Image 1 (tube, rainbow over the protein chains, first blue to last red):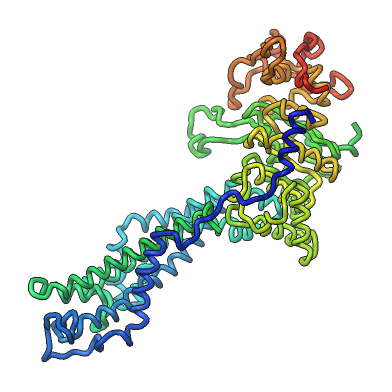
Image 2: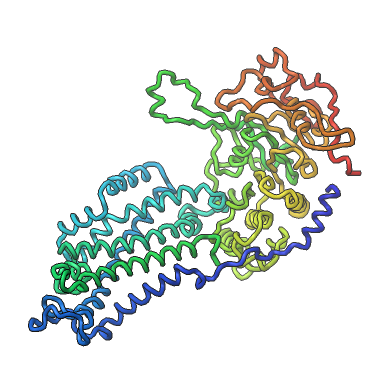
Length: 294
Length: 342
């Protein structure tokens, strides 16, 4: 080796594998913490509904209808004399449960299909993507409303309708990410290491592409909650008398000029929920990006 | 050369890519339209046991394609690759794949950002049962030490390392499966100059200590001068000259090699280098010139050069050149590189 090389080698000999970058701890991530607080509070409210709700949400009291807010009914009562606050608290159970659960099936199904299509390409990719295109051609809400109308109202048909429509987004996202990831040298390197396609896809590509799907899933939860509320508002969702935010808005809007809080408060809580989940998604996208990863 | 000295032998390997829409082409008026790209055109090359062979050429000359064919991630269109005297199967099994490993150019895309260094190494060690499970950690540390890294790298993720450190980790990953051959595809061209030297030195150490045979791809002759035993020069999908490193720098017998040597930037007491400057871009691989493929850019070209397409011919005991005027070329008078070396 030439002289300059030898000098350089001497300098480099002192090198240590020190970690060059310190990672930002999760609790310093503003939107993540805000999202966790909001969503956490709502989830807690849903879980503790039987304890914290002052009245039975479906117990009618026809001698006590359409009360203005008072100390005994903080948000008043609706046209059947039911306590609005209690219905709001119990409604969190239905809306949050459907919002979060409805994401799972399309997430799993769409990601697997999109991942296989992107990785193997060829005819599989062609078929999957044409089907995706067909589903994509219809607006989300229109498809969900039509499917729920066909399947009949109820929680099961809401899950089914949302799953049938929203898997395409996950398939599209994961496919695109896999197509990029499979050309990366670390994937080629893993194949050269003698690993099977399945192992490469699950162990090496999967963790790198799923974060995008998870982040999208967060905005999808917002969309699903909105879908449930919309269906409830249209009278297609959860059958009455179950407390649900959408149908509360529908019931309350008749009296918007006199008892404005009956429609407005459920509307606001939908907004707050969406905001909380969006914050959570935003914070997660920060946390899940590979460079920040601990 | 007797075949037993070569660990990897490439015979008449070609690689053609068909671009464009195959269906559209069927209906086009000109079925012979130039949609076929010839990346490699009849490559004969051998990598001897325990040597570092440099493969040098401009971008687009097919070096990387050849590297990918050797590791098996791209299939050759025609030709044969022999590994230790026996032909490579088209679909390599886990055990054959293991023998020839690759170090990539870009250390930022060659390591999985979501796997810790320890996880990458132990996965390979366990998959190939290189060591028993309880010795995996010790073996991983040995691998890291071998490439000049310390034990504390095991639990860290690639994003926590610099480019040079990542390249060391990538080399450790390639070594984990105990290969016989290392294909290094421009492993230093993405690194800082100060780091390049130490990585080059690591390759020399690996050859000396492990007896690895290394094919070192580079686009710059200066990089390989002190590293390799032999140099093969590629131009437009062909190997145009092969010789021992000292021989190729002192007595290049192909005008293209001369141009490459003279294009190495250097300063001497007499001033900067002012040799033949290679003019123009390499021709399109869709449309390779008739005759010798270097003739449009060659300062020694004659009419005969546009008529015959020369094959690689011996011009000395350890020297082959694909130039019909190889013996007529004037004595090479380039200033020796690195005069400061005594």
